[in-house]
Amino acid sequence: MHQFVVERAIAAPPEAVWRVLVDAHTLANGNFGILRLEGRIALGEKLRLWSAVAPKRAFPLTVTGFDPGRSMVWSGGMPFGLFTGTRSFALTSEAAGTRFVMREVYTGPMTGLIWPSMPDLTPSFEQFAAALADKAEQPA
Image (spheres, rainbow, N blue to C red):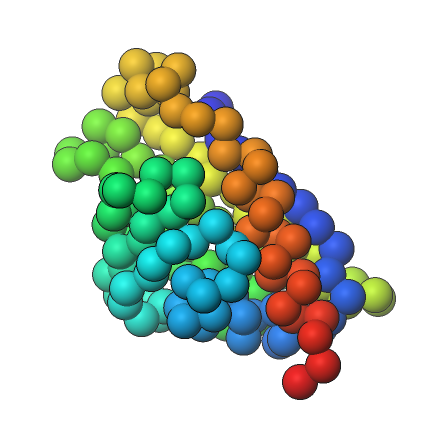
């Protein structure tokens, strides 16, 4: 399986983390590695995302999973499932706050050909998790 994963403890309740995670304006105007994000973050909605990793390219995404306060899934890729990226966000309540996990899994028959040319997204995943923690841990 081809994937990138980041996991982080956040010293804020899941509700505070969720508010940040579904706020497109905050994601695009913070230190999340997202340069621009168009669309409403809600089940079935279409998004267009420009990232610092590939600033000239818009990634069309669909919010395919949405369980408020717990999890969300963004999916995108090539037609006919030739290459698909599925990014999941999971929040789990812990005594000290929230366990955040973001995972992006790549599937489809073209994955073996495309994967070697992809940049290592680990630093951008870590940046996203750190920015999420910083924002969620701020007093309301």
